[in-house]
Image (tube, each protein chain N blue to C red):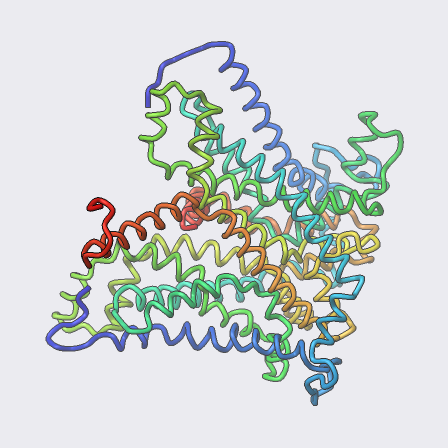
Length: 330
Length: 284
């Protein structure tokens, strides 16, 4: 890339143009992150306490008390449970729709319409969706109870929002309902990025639709699937809006997620900043570890093998060049 | 593609099941909104006797009258959210394009490390920093101000990443060189040549930033306590309060009022939005 003209160096403009980003990043992201991490090691509590100190006896005390806190354990369990309950149907249905929408042998009409409709819930404010679903599942008179009772599926109205399992399922369903359209569009665009030559070759070889999907589409979709998995996991572990507005973590902490736990610890009356900060850092670690494990599991094994072979070949070539041991001469 | 028209029973069965399934999902996506729209026009006794109905009634204005003198002020929330979302979107788009320009057009020593940092920041979720962010804003006296909700979007790693991907193939360096020969300064080159060229990418990112900022609840809920400054999602969560327990029609109407602006934007721009989501996935 040419960046010099008439002997003038333009590299200083690279620094100049990135100043706003760097400044905003330092002030609004890096400093609060470090500050949060530090608070986790202090005795900072309450709104007015201005002097706070690092914990002297046991510097990890906040972290320990968070990890031993029953509420936190429940919230972590709920968060993971709700994420899994939403992700499995989400990815299954998204993959199914992807297979249909990209099928060459059975063209489906109205794809554009379906995409617009399936994606729509994603654009609506999560708080609105939460209250809408609360109204729809309300007891004793709500649309869902109305359908179930008048169709004879239930004898009497069911108190959905009072049941732990039902509430969790509803939160997971809302998550699924808002995100499957998004996942489907991402996967479809991933499939459209796969070279058509591979599909043509498969067709010539006589592969049927199911074989093509599992042998060609899925392996080639690996990076996109990883992207979906990681973004969904990070989003799921930070789930806040829907559980908070839907039932504020209830009933009996059944939909209490870690983000709601952190909010309640820090801002909803109790102001236990140090423990909330410790919980935030623990969540951050969980997210980083989960993503790292996913990247490790989904890494391209063939590529690693190829790299190793290339390295080995290079090493051998060097040996030959040095006049070292050469098996062909033996 | 080879399009041989085959009408074997297998493909008919496949199509029938595919269309049925898609139709079911369509109902699933639309029904909650239809219930919301219809019930917004019905009175509470009507909803209590039959919560599910597809026939609108005539209590729309009466339901609206319920909001008078209460905390839920949809138009105030709309105005507040509009200020925050517009401010954040402008900051986000302008400065992200600028950062991407710095990464693409110039060769500086810290360019690669800087890009790595941007990629790493993508991993930090906002909730993690919220305690420190709140404490910091508390001591800076910026609580109940819109600035901490707008200014952080100057550093938006996702947008920078997207802009960089878009800029690399579409920005010819020759144009920059000839503009320099004509005597244009670097800042003017950016504003008058680069920005217009990036319009399609900026439009896509603007939609997503706008909707994302509009919908966010966590940070505004932490930072804003003055009810006059509540954003739309915060106004919505007021509908959860006890005073609306007996006003079901009003709750549905309140929800509808918060959804209308988003639906208008969505149906006007749905093509661009779907294309933008698709683009976002490919980058992974």
